Length: 504
Figure 1 (cartoon, one colour):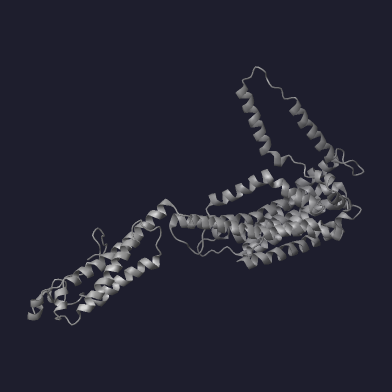
Figure 2 (cartoon, rainbow, N blue to C red):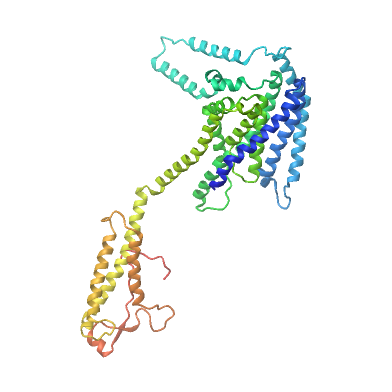
């Protein structure tokens, strides 16, 4: 329901912030602020990779793949999943320690000077890349002999490709130079050894993978669930308590995430990684790992969470380790307001689209409605007309007072009533009226059935009282007075042209 979602707005960021802040406090105390932080960082990488991989594999085997791995009586237990996750993660930890750490140390030594300064800074690389791109644009020469349509086509394709790749080439750190508040936020943050931060870049890759995994466990599931439900209702014609999402539906959700990241993901990256607080590889690792842990634990128990809210709490958690000025609280207030606004905007928008779909008239639904109205009205009108026609044949007998159950006054009153009911029912059908309330049509039908109920008997199981049996009065007065019996007519409830599917 909505209540758990609102509750998650508060608990998800708080829990993630506490976990991220605690993890960053431990790493900062034991590694970052130590004189030999660079050497200590390499001791942190293998156990961190082991722990991160263990979490991912364990949750895969206990949540996503558990049903597939359980065959017959051989249940896939959590203990078995823990053992496999421990073995795989420990093996990867050994690979990192034996193979990757020497490579990483070599790259770090070649990238930095002995004093820890970077040989070529990222800013210099960015400026060089930007200058190279500008030079490529300036060197573009248009062939004067080339057809105009071909030149226009090339320019159009080049502009389209540039627009598609715009999100992958934006320098999100330009905001530090443009916004004074953000610049002060970054300037006042504690700076650690660049070589240590460089070592944690590779560790952050593992934490980012963990976040992506948990993001898929939550966000993609939110999309795949409703989509799979709609698909199941369309293909099977019914709604079931549980639906398994096909792989292609999950793929659509994952593809949407990739496209969104490639096009407009830089806006969120700039907001979360630059504007909200100062992030570095060490801080990012702590925020991402805490986010992954909270989301996966919540997914394990079916609790609603959002990766956006969790990572926000994680970033605030590491930012608060710099003090209360380590977080851009104004921006966070706007972000929290957007969470609330999103719930109402999406809810109202979905309600509007759904209402437009079910309440907007269509040609097919109009035909169905007209058919339904005509059939109900025709059935009721036929009963009124049949009853009235049959009753009028006994008018002479009623006037002669030979029928105790049908006097002259009763015949006159019933005749007028039936004539009006028939006319009203006829007016309700057809296209003379745009729309008729179902209660009105079924009111006529119920009145007609009430007449039949009050003036006929069931013949099922009877011997002498059946349609066509010689048990009924003739409409001739003399025959009634003489006690002559004729065949009983069967009531005609269906109008001409209406067919019954009953097996009798």
